[in-house]
Length: 441
Image (cartoon, rainbow, N blue to C red; front, side, top):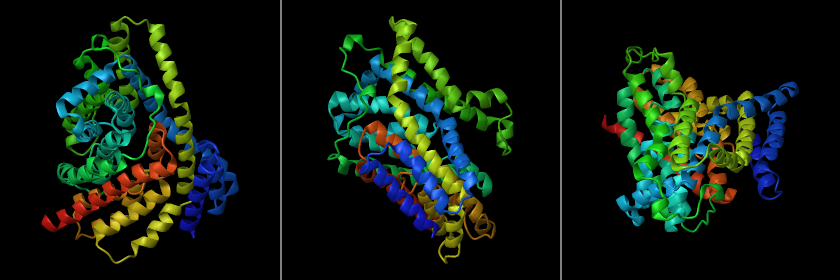
């Protein structure tokens, strides 16, 4: 019954947005309230749950998305994105741009949270699309697939790192196994699958595209790349430094409060934005008010996206507070199947119901902990199986779904055909990789 209610809620949400043309934010709030009543939540708790869902997701993403949009807008207007696109094409050639973006997405995705990496790569993706008139999704999907794999499978991302601790797995082995599983998942869900998407006419947000500039007006390749990827570099350095600390080596957290402060994505993005203001703004003869005008227009570009993401947070919170994820997972736990496959199934079902990959992974870990402690299953592979399941079938209750849809400016149906299928390929290929490794090691 709970699963049927969730399914009806999702169908209603799609109907309101697609056919009734209700704004997604309002549709999310209405559906969240209706689902809460249907799932038996106390009436007095529903409004608070919706507010908490909106506040939690905006609190975690607003600074990243807004500063990322500002950085992206400046990278585009200064010509840095055009310069980076030219460097990529010279290095890989136009015909191999999907592979170039997959490699770039993976490199960026290892140290960065998915949302940070996405907003940083969007202007570069759009510059490649505009300058060389390549199909938007053929170029964009490989980068997103690579970042998604890193987010779901590889430490130091929150869910994989927490799962390693929960199951007492080996961080190094999990990372090595994860890299082995990641490669085929990225190839099949990225460049290979992206070839089938050339017929979808994506219309990327105009705020992240610009008319090509003459070569003489472009900033240098070095400063363009450094400015655009500075957040990734800073997070990578602080992450490596954290793992090298004595406390981290003993399974704890880095002892330096300053290090934890500097490695926070919000702080990193602000530092990068200040650097970009100087390197691509003031150093190139622009006044500070002029740069601030660029930042102001960037906020306008992403305001609607923030509202949509806020709505998805309300829906997710209702599903979590109602306990529907735990009910479904417990029902599945009694299945007599391979523990690694069971872990994937339980996590995938929670992911479909809740939307958040991190929540799905951590919830499944609590349910499946007795399976691991009972022996007979490799803890490192259990981490990866849950990680793969947490990426399955991203749809309308996942904020990443709406980020992809709104930035690339495609319909819900087109997003399901591209983003949702891509995430599902990553998940299934990841599971197959885990099962193969289980037979070898």
